[in-house]
Figure (spheres, rainbow, N blue to C red):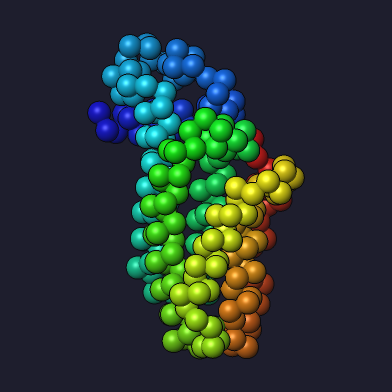
Length: 213
C-alpha cells in the first residue's frame, strides 16, 4: 500500500503544481489519477490529510537526499553548492499557485513540516561551516551559530515575505542564488579561488528550467 501511496502522491503533486490545491476536489483528483473516490479515501481520509502527506513526502525525500550527500567525500564548498542543487530541484515541485494555496488554506501543515526541515537544515549548515573552516575554505573569524541561524532565517523569511511577487524569481532560484551568496561571504581567498574553478567547470543551467509550470 505504501508503494502505491507514493505513486499516487507523485501524481497528485503534479496536479497541484499545475492547478493549485484550492481548485481540486477529492472527486476531481480521483478521476485524474484513475481511481474511484472511495478508493482514494482508503489512502487519504480527507483532503487535509492528503495535503499533509504530500508535504511530508516532499520534505522526507529532500532530507534523504541531504543525508546521502553528507556521506560523500567532497569539500564544504562543493557540498553546499550541491545542496543548492537539491533545494532547486525540491522547490521546482511547487508552483507559486500551489505555495499560495498552502499558505492560505493549510498554514499549520506547512509550518509543521517547515519546522522539522528547518532544524535539519540548521544542523547541516552548521556542520558545513565548521568543515569549511577546517579545510581553510571559509574564514575562521565568524561565529558559526550566529551565521547559521542568520542564513537559515534568511532563506525561510525571504521565501514567505510579501516581496516574492516577481513570478520570474521562483523559490528554486531564490535558494540557489542565496546559497552562492552565502558561500562567497564565508569564503577565504582559497575558498573563492576554488569556487571560481568549480563554477567554471560546472555546466551552466538551462535557462528554461527556471520557469515554473
